[in-house]
Image (cartoon, rainbow, N blue to C red; front, side, top):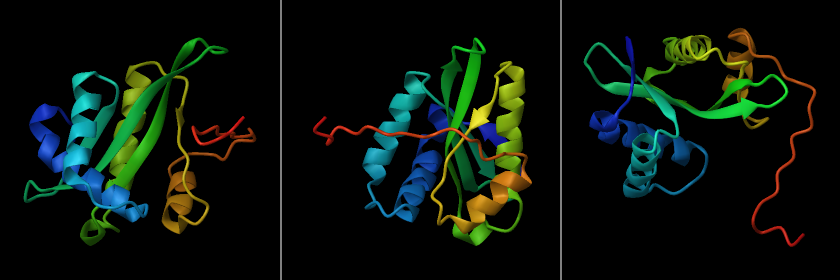
Length: 150
């Protein structure tokens, strides 16, 4: 298994996995939209994408991290927003390898932390993240969306 940092040369492989990830979260397939979205992130250096390639050199998993900052600690903070492994490749430790590579990025950039969130119903993720050293924090997580009238 090889984990690499994606660039525009890997856009097609990353977009296929990203589209499958969105389908997993009950969104309609939109491969062209996925490709455009990731292309913008990579061109604008707005995210870091790691791809996992199996022994046959097929992309089988990815994670995408967005840079943030913590004012209190005056440091970078990475948000692990997306993590997905092809259903046929699950159970092989690929998620753990992608998380390990994300932790290497955090250490290399002297980041304060990596944050993530997942649905409460994501049984696999809710077992994976504590097993890889993540803890549930005690903060209140609020969201305002553009359909809110206030």
